[in-house]
Image 1 (cartoon, helix red, strand yellow):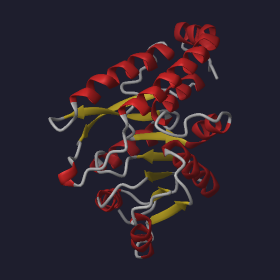
Image 2 (cartoon, helix red, strand yellow; image 1 turned 30 degrees about the vertical axis):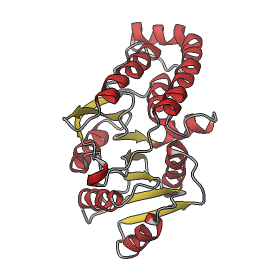
Image 3 (cartoon, one colour; image 1 turned 90 degrees about the vertical axis):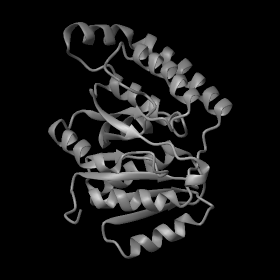
Image 4 (cartoon, helix red, strand yellow; image 1 turned 90 degrees about the horizontal axis):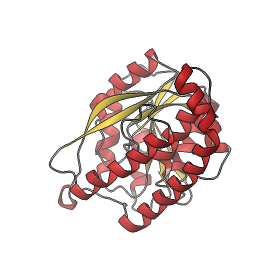
Length: 257
């Protein structure tokens, strides 16, 4: 895509993704302009190669963070840049090739139709998806729906999404969480509390094996402990907001921030 958008930008946080990141960026650029990559302290040499790609492509910009700070921290850096440059929405996608770049125009179009909403990918898994992770995410999804009184979150963990910049940035600046693997589920819960409605669109997801260039930084015990702590503190926040959430659920009005 050659005509740049002045409101919506594709944001790709990236940490040691291997060569898949280049395919991801090329696929995203074929669908949208501009595309930003936030290199989160990568040490695999991809930062330099991405900068070379950006030097030859006006629609691609690469921001390099000096150290690994986590996915959420990389997204927040992108939100800061988006605010500075006047963008109202970001589409986040992973750098490892799992997310469907061909759906970027559809997600952006829905966001332009409903700018007050967050447009969430609802993953459609194929045989490549690890069974343990597919089953395990159901637990996080159940908690996220409880914490929002079933506001309509289709999947709390799938990171292919369009966010309105201002509310998400405001939420993240007010507290120190949502900086690592906890970013995706906590973002949707807190945005629902803030009053941002979810819109769900089906999205195929592909898990690549190591022999196909797939790279995963998911650690079952570490990241599930992080999610457990996240849902524990979100339940406290839910309890404090419950009267407002109930009132909004019953009346269809109000914002529980």
